Amino acid sequence: MEILVCARRVPDTSENEIALNAAGNDIERDELVYSINEADNYAVEEALQIRDRVGGNVTVVTVGSEEDEEILRRELAMGANQAALLSDEAFSGSDGKGLATILKDFVKKGRYDLILTGVQADDGAAQVGGMLAAMLDYPFASLVCSITVEGGKLRVGREIEGGNHEINEIDLPCVLSIQTGINEPRYVGMRGIRQVASVPIPTLGVSELGVDTATVGEVAARVKRVDYFVPAASRGAQMLSGTREENADRVLELVAARGGLK
Amino acid sequence: MARIFVYVAQKGGVVDDSAVELFAAAKKLDAAALPTVILTGWGADLDAACDSLSSSFAEVWKVANPALAYPNAELVRQALVSVVPPNSILLVPHDHFGIDLAPGLSIKLNSAFASDVLAIEGVEGNFLKLVRQEFGGQVSTHVRCDASSGAVITIRPGAFKAEASAPVSGVVVDKSSAVGALTARRRYVETIVAEAGDVDITKHSVLVSIGRGIQEKDNIGIAEELAEVLGAAVSCSRPVVDAKWMEKSRQVGSSGKTVKPKVYIACGISGAFQHLAGIKGGPFLIAINKNPKAPIFQVADVGIVDDILEFLPELTNKARELRGVAK
Image 1: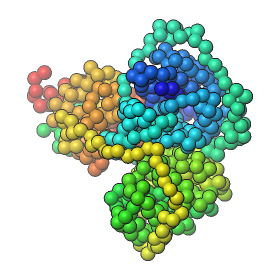
Image 2 (image 1 turned 30 degrees about the horizontal axis):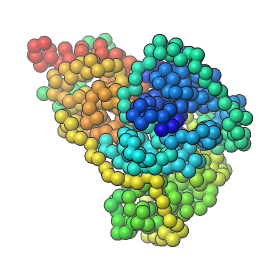
Image 3 (image 1 turned 90 degrees about the vertical axis):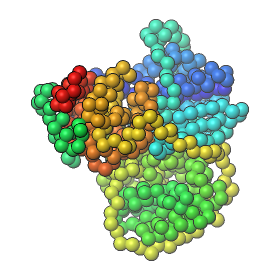
Image 4 (image 1 turned 120 degrees about the horizontal axis):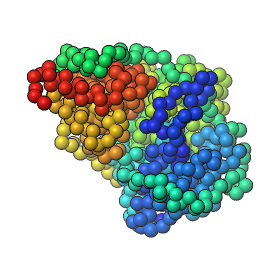
């Protein structure tokens, strides 16, 4: 099976506190640690496991700049067969639809049976997978938490309310957005990344992909982020500022007053 | 102002609670508008759902088709593309169904798409000023959405409060004939109900709930010791389950369990809305987190900025002293 995974490099929320910059028009990016978006990493792992069961190839693609190549190399070290960076001045400022358009043009250059995305990026909108599927006229399922290959079809579980799973049968080719927790992504060490250091990663732009520049970038974006802000606390917690010992005493008083600690 | 529609799923004739919230959101877009609700389904269930909404919406568009008996997003999308007029604004709940339906629908309608919107701050001509969050609620953003060729907007559950409005005698308009043949390449098979698990966190009045701040599986014992002395159970947020450190049955949130404890001690939990959606009944919420900007402090009653790996053992020792329990 030919599998394509669309991934993104994002500020890692487990490594950073996200704060506003002085101008308030962006988050403070100077000291940020970036990594592959968590759900996208699960998508790559799922693709590798399917490939290892039924054969085929896994390709990882991202839309971005040179800096984003590091996540592609990381996913190659995990075991992806190839990677591609989609990068062009004309792509900058794209909204979700613009990103989906660039990916659609890339997909049409190849032949993929299965396309995976993460369900959502930390700074995203859970939109690109569903848009890409609609542009390609492929079936789509979101929030996927299990995949079984059954001939020319897949049996996929979707995570719905209350931890229940909705099981669907879906025809190939299709697009699935992968929920975190679907598998246990393998560890990638520095040594693994060094081993793929010389694997070429092609960079493809407007001319290679045949992108209509009127459909991407700032010019095409109908949805634009204007600014970042931190909303004023509506109520906010009463913050305890004592020593660790004093705070622990206070918490126990509060818990006891509400029927705990019996 | 474009015509405003809301779409809500119904199952077995019961309309999703989000209908009143979407109505409130539509009023924020245009206070004078009479939003139209669209319902899809089949048979008596659909008729019952249409009737129940005709007292709150002036117009209810009914799309009946046997293929729509179960809300399969692929088929619902085909139906909506046939009935929604060009350049309309369509509101959909940001839940597991909306996430499935809305992005692709916006492409097929050639509309703008904005997702997980929690406030609507204004409308200037064809431009909508919307509020979203990023990074698990750590920061908010204003988003400008060009709705000149329509917009599909998903609305965060719970963000818009239902407003009391006088009952109307709405009309049900049958739009079924506008929908042609529906073909599914994705077919619903069955629903698998979540396993109960060894501990029922929904039955406990005190919960010690752990998040990413617990850092590794071996540290869970710290929370278990505290829970034992408090007579509490240990629950958790999504990252702990994703890492396979605790069973899914311990997860609090929109994709886990809904709990109603008296006291909820959130330990190393950032406070993403999906997690908060699982905490009901207004418990006394104590939050401990290293990050003073963690969104959990916005909703907690009492907050402590500290490392849970240091603070929880201290709390456990103090509780043992208080109860005279030997170590």
